[in-house]
Image (cartoon, rainbow, N blue to C red; front, side):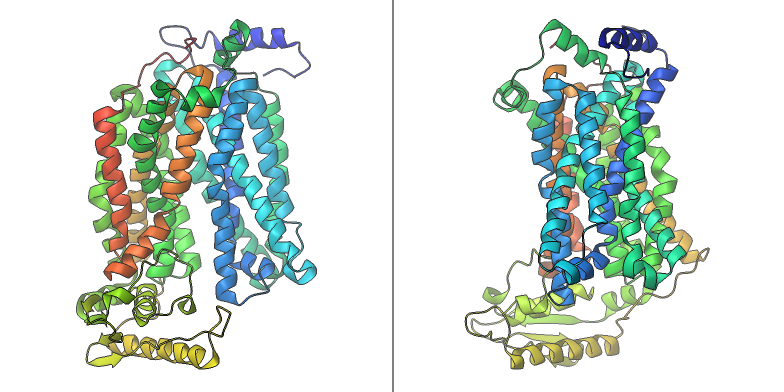
Length: 581
């Protein structure tokens, strides 16, 4: 990696010499230059994931600082919707920067994406709060969040392709697996920085102003990763396309308007990425949500347990990436998908028994029945909605029970009948709600009736044996080690599916449109299929009355991906990705 003052032709020649013929047939040696280039790509991507996940780690504080004009429940809901906005625009970023990467090159494009991500994250730490500038605060925040999503949409594809095109053919799974560790390491880094800053400043100062420091820290990461990437050479595979005049002039058209390649894009989405995404989000994000929200484990304890599991299982990405170099991509990924389908239910049930045994006992023994007219029971796909967003007694009751992790059954009543909740021998009646004319706000009587119902429901559940929180889980206790083992098992499943994915994707598509073709299915799968895990899981729980039933969504998606990939996705191990095609 020489300074950029060297003439372009000299730099390309030096880079090719240093790589000792990356595209050559036979075994390519591992060189210091190649290792530095791959390390620079991976570190930059770790920093981008850190920036992206930092918002989620601080969502509760952001809700208070930027959405202060509404009550706390709505503020948190709006903060989570702003977080989701970054996922929604990731496919747009994939198209925008994917096209750019196939037109001007990999190196220049992911220098742009890392700068965009770093600056937008840094600016989040500078935006004044709602108390200072009113409604402009959430507008600025959402705008910066959208820029983060756009940047990440272009970042992953560029870094993944660059590493794959630099790696030796027979070690491509090993080298690209380092890129696959970056999402986990970025999440881990964001958790550690938040926990460390909170411990250093104390809770009061951290929540008053110290929460901005992790965002401001990103400017240092931006400087380091930007400097490292600016010193890189262009991928030799893409450089040869430019030199030969065979680079695509319309990457989006060539990727999606021609059936030969569109078929590969669809196979990548439904036969690989969709399943990988739900396994990843279930094994890491949903596991953290399940511990904190469903099992009522202390937030710091849950965060430390998940962080420890991430740290323990991060090397598994490289292990399974290397294994795919020897036995093929499909056997490793397929085994991970199949084990996830078989293992999610028993692992999450074991999490419940280890973290909150009293809750598990109550779910198994306390009889709770919701009786209502089925026509008044609706789909509840918004996990951050509030009780007063619903009018029917059935919806109010089911939502309250689902949020309390209560196991319940449902009994249909005649049309027009009022809803009722039976807990053991006690029966509660959810209130009928009315709203102020021309608004969505409840009138005072309905607001009070809703509060009374929630209070009565809470008291009835506690009296029946449902705990209000999990027992304290101390470091080194038996339950702590069991939870760590279970979370690590989920991490291994994630690594099996995710580790060889980038090698498979890069080997699937031709060099001239690889950036565009890879990026869109990856971000559609992860941003939408994976991002929908909490929403759809909660809707299933509220509809079925079982806190574990939400796992059917990731299980069914992973099973469908396993079948599609097994039947139609080609094995790509050993492909020459440097041919001019």
